[in-house]
Length: 198
Length: 74
Image (cartoon, rainbow over all chains, first blue to last red; front, top):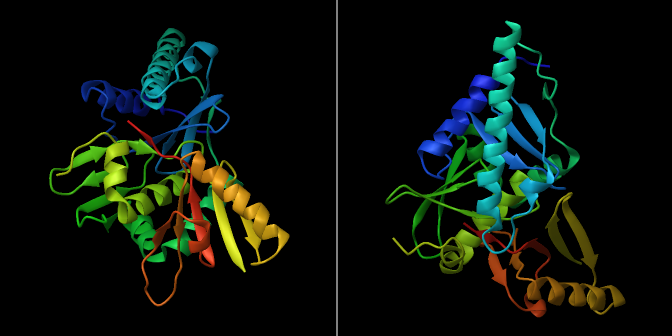
């Protein structure tokens, strides 16, 4: 169990608000649990915080469901974090964070990582070393593939972060899906991500 | 022997089949179903530095194939 993570949560969420929807965090990644009952913030030291989601947070859906989800989930995280800070101030000491602990990757995460490793070993090595890897789209455009869920693909020419996700799969599967689409069918990918060609 | 690695919540589910067997017919049915749902299929690990390829027809499948669920845009 780790304590003192609340500041990180608030800072991460603050970046999100300031950027108006663009997720820019150097110290954490956000993830939605596969059964959509929990939301997870993972830090680079592999510790992570999980939050249960209530019904109102799950009622958004449709074509833009992911974007709506993200907005509501971040709001939920902020409320939870602020409440925890207030309790700390009330009691005069830091309350142990029961939901924050050091965890090993799940079997699904390990399986997805193995698939990525055997499909694109060089890109895997680069991402593991730097946190990102250079890839080239089927139309010749250069991109950076970042190891994160939201806005994982960045166009080098204008530093635009493109938003497209492979829903319901572990992080490494998501990265592999995006990589394959960009490298083999870039135009279709750009159409999905709602962006024009550079 | 051909393999379809279908990405899902557990990481991936692998379906192996030989040509001309009943397993191939099942795999073909699954392939059609996945494609109709918007999944993208890629032939990977093609050897000798040959790049991956997007596959749109069952006959084009190679020995190692990855199925990516429909990508959602933001």
